[in-house]
Image (cartoon, rainbow over all chains, first blue to last red; front, side, top):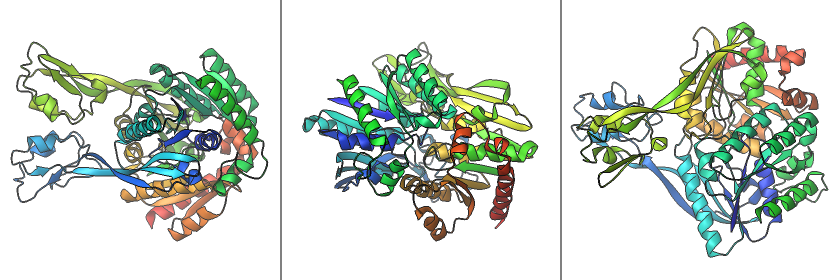
Length: 287
Length: 279
């Protein structure tokens, strides 16, 4: 069984549209939406949210005013400025480190675990799917990503599936690191802009850091041919497999508005055959 | 005044709007790129960097000679950054959240302060605009402490424009918290609208006034306008999808610099932000 993780560094390059199109083509696979912070894959996959589970994160400091002697020890030890002079906890600033809880001489601080989100196992139009929704303004996105990837892996093993198709988050930080450890390969969906190239370099460096082989494709390649060429050159220089280009095509957005992937959409498009071509290359590299 | 430019979804035009706004405001503006995982503002503003410093997180280091293996540090650490097996102590600095608990509880002063590189902070100028950004070290997971460091550079005498990271979780909160105004940038597509809703919910947790820029009008559908009306979010600017704008962006150009007809629109945008923020 293989796992392909689709990343981009920069947001909005078409990661999710490409992942969903792959899902419409691939057989015997499970989908995993690891962009738990701003998950969009469900808008195209239309999952049934068949099984849902709470995601419990760390604790939150809660001061019992009846027990509190206002000694100020908690304020002194908190490195996140989360407790004010009136001994009110700023829930957003609280890191969940529990140092105040352990060091309060009156044992006046409770530390209840917080529900930080939900995750789901669904049947969808595009196949089985594990996905999640991180609570608004929550932390621990990396843990939630690790959790749903692990679930997807277990289901894939149990059902003897060939492939896990994982839609990754943008950036290079905590949730991205959690989304690529142990992956077979990553595919970077880039775009021919200075930002697209800059961010692709950083995510490629991250993949190298974790020794995961990378592939790259360019979405909307015809918006700037020079930059597309620069991405090709860069890929060659860094031993990244260049697997193809997708033209700018308004039909992709039109299909999205209609809740479909471009490869399923009835209207012919230039993007659909391009994505199919990339998929064929990706499969070759994965095998 | 501190204006955060945020979006929920990535790639909707946050950086284009933040950079254009800073450019049109000129010497009044300070630009702070808080998208430290993928900072892009410098690709457009091309600042002359005058100060470049590493930013560190405080992490523990064990003095094996002093450690009596009481495990107090292991017990207080909620992030599993310290482990003990028999008479061996292992520190995993990359898991450390710098809460300082281990330093506090160690009775033997065996836990020393060491540090982990988070990334770099750079400051400089782009023409008349003050420029600050952070660059997270590739391989580093924790963006918020570096974002807070960039935020600490806000100059009260200027109009501080913060280019926030995408998403709705802790990095966005770290970037936007304490702003006077959140300018949301989205596009009229189902993905754009869906993530805008999440972004708005996150900003509302912070109780900051919100205005909307709709980018790439002409693609997608009209749902975003209906949403803005329903939620009483003022639309402060609409930018049509034009190949020319996409092309300027693609090679690192600044829209109001290369298309001067946009200058007035961004100055007007700032006036509307001021008006909305005062309501």
